[in-house]
Length: 387
Image 1: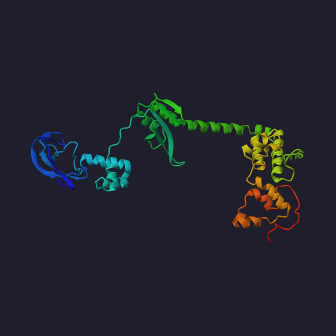
Image 2 (image 1 turned 45 degrees about the vertical axis):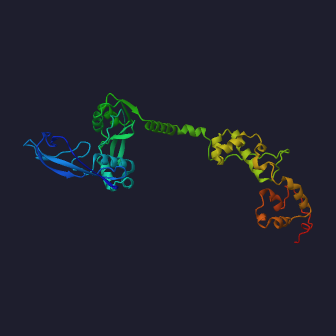
Image 3 (image 1 turned 90 degrees about the vertical axis):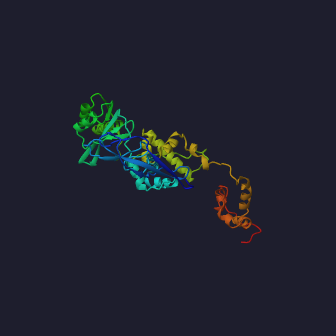
């Protein structure tokens, strides 16, 4: 033993071994040799395992295995270059990380293997024991759509494929189900060959129609029913060739705070009147939305409002703003002829502030003041500032 590796020499203490060809016990030693299987590291050090292995003579003359080497159970196997412990470790790494990533992790823990070796060890593992399926799902798949079809059997509880018959004949399905006597439920569509095969192969199983095919068949039946009674539906539906009557525009109420001419108020009044005209014509809200290209929420707001004034809310109401405290001063400057008062702000706050004026100052920037129509007095600009 040194700082890098640990050397272990061992030999078997059994008096004989079992012949792998005929299973006879033999004590006759033919020869011996040294075997060096790779093992997992121990404490960060490589393990050099040196085994003294004996070769025995088979006592049965008719056996084709004249001589054979002894194997240590749980440690070695025939033609194996790794111990069973190292094989199981690399196989577990391969199952978790596959080939390339598993090889990188193996090098970190001191095992130098390639990704192909890791994958080969994973492929050599025996298939896990799958419990007998209790609920089988049967459906078809296409190897070439419209020409060649096969059948797939799925374990519904574990969601894993159970079998793949090459065709969709009833005899093939019956043979697959006969191999599984523990099947209690067969979930399938209503194809006649599936029904016949399930009855013949698993007569004790309960046939169940799967949910997708039930909904699919129901939708097809509803579509056929509607198509058969299309003439009845056309009598009840309004004639699309007749143009919709133009809604009567409501008169401007005298007490409305929003006079005619405001684009928001006019547009809202027109939409409100149109929706209520169509409601009076006994059209549903969904039909109104399709005809006017409106969402269901917009139609609901317009239909629930008794008057258009109920819809004037949000940004169109007089909500408080940061400019309220300065509006009297701005009105006074405007009345004094301060059409170019923006120069005062530019002079004191910089030129960039003029371009970044808040939206609440838009009436004074556009020359409309607080919204009350007043003529420009025509006087000189802000006193104290040149033109």
